[in-house]
Length: 316
Image (cartoon, one colour):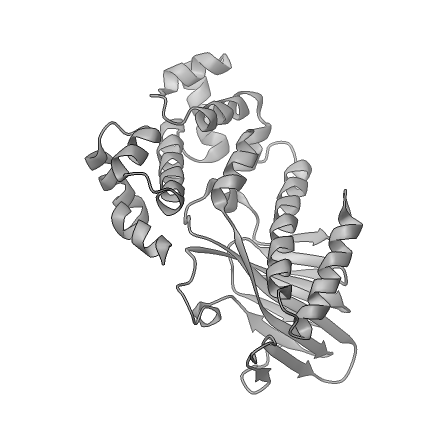
């Protein structure tokens, strides 16, 4: 498995949909997925917000940048930054509390708002994962936009998304789950296209994949995570001196090779604690720790809780 697929597998995204909204210009609302969307459980450690435009168009603004999104496009916010949705840039947001209809037994929450002009309909959702420090998510830009119809299978995905969105608006059984799974596919596709568009000289985890030496080192680390790697051994494997390799790796990824490996081991351990009945000591050994005590100390520093508490929480 290549390093990108490896990290996608470890992210373990789970999708959800929380709002069907119709607007008429002019309109502007503030948006960010928060705890109120999880009344029956704890909010995931990391959230990716998304909005799919069913009809019309809108602008998504994070900070000072406004991105136009048209019908058939999906926009994703990899770090769930607070943002504005609007019919045009520069509008002031309207409080939505008086316009929001809570979800019924078989229907989603809905929002109807605007001044009577051009109509826009969107479906709002999220992708969640329990790993708070995944290297893939950390390197992505604040906004990713994807034309759903583009690419192999795009027409099928787009028609499926439209159909599920229509059923979701009518409270169709299972439609939210379908939208969540399709959103997972679209996130993977959005990342792949972003990777293909990176310019020369770009830094970050995805840029590291494209570098011959660093990409090879990442593949080695991910394929043999329990091996007692050293910077010297990795440098020999990729054909560079220790100093040249360490500088190249750190420049591209923003962290030294051994720091990256330590973080990745903990990401894998967290995943296995959640999904495997294996003892903590066995999981520690499997990801490269020589003692359970050292693993527990490192895990608590990274996740703020013990492996046993993490496993109990993940089980709930």
